[in-house]
Length: 410
Image 1 (cartoon, helix red, strand yellow):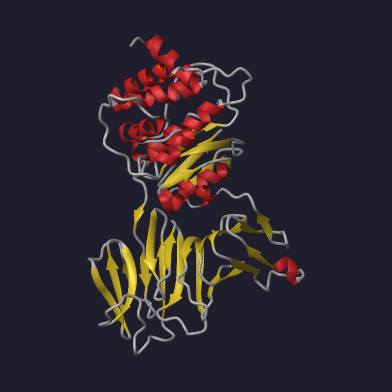
Image 2 (cartoon, rainbow, N blue to C red):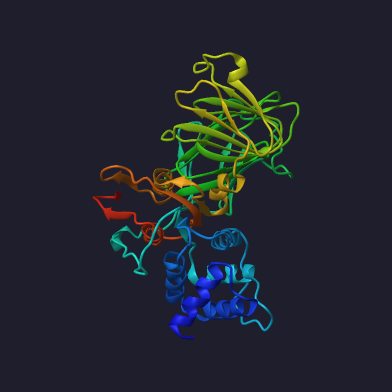
């Protein structure tokens, strides 16, 4: 296939005018390309084609990217030649194996030539992506680095065993047959804290059976045994929880700005210190979000709200009432837990905060923060250099400072 023909087929597909036969020919060609040539072909196609009204990607192009982003969540089948007509979902999964990365598009960006942007990030900035790991702080102040411990019982607190298995922490009564059963001699008053530094994430099962996922730079503090009337934890950063049902003991989550009351549900809380808002997003069940009293200077009707599935409560710095977002993108909220960066409608400074936490780098802006809005996403398994090379396609430049500083240049 000549260069002119393959480019023409690619543009016809992106613009939604390719026939079924042309699609099959294009997909088969892409699947046979070496990794590097495939990456360049895809990026060139997305960056170089013309739009009649200069309004960014066509709907077909956007759907192409969305298919790839969704396919990332599924286990891709091995690549093999196929005699029957290729479906795009198969191709999307195959491209993930061959290319190893996803691509994003700068909304409304105008690219006037086919030249590929040249990455300016030095190889020494090719930091690996984050991984599973955390620190467990015991009630007496002892700290255990969970990254390096062997599988098995790692501690015993007044009859309760602390177990590490396949990168997950859980609790069990010593000698009990059923995980999660409360000990006969409970460690009442004893608290544990699990914290993730930058570049780490972790999952644990609380003593009541509730499951917790910690994003990078996050923590949760909880009792080794919950009381019979209430289950209360304190969190910072970003946490996803699936709460075990217990109508007699409501589950309470305390953050710096709010308290969330739960009976049994799945929800995400983002409460980073460097964000202007704390966000509680409900996936299943019902929760009540209560603004902390020291910050609640308005009537109780503004200081407490009930959330339904698909809704998000926002506590914004300087705004008294709790905002409710009823059209939240749940896939975007939970993308981090599923191993994906989702940058849909995100500004550059929002994206760089995620990059800083996951790759453990300090972001420094040279001049004003570029006013750019992105959509699409990429895998969290990419190295930092791979990630930045993709971002540079949107005319954002990076350079290296001392230590782990990453300088963003207009």
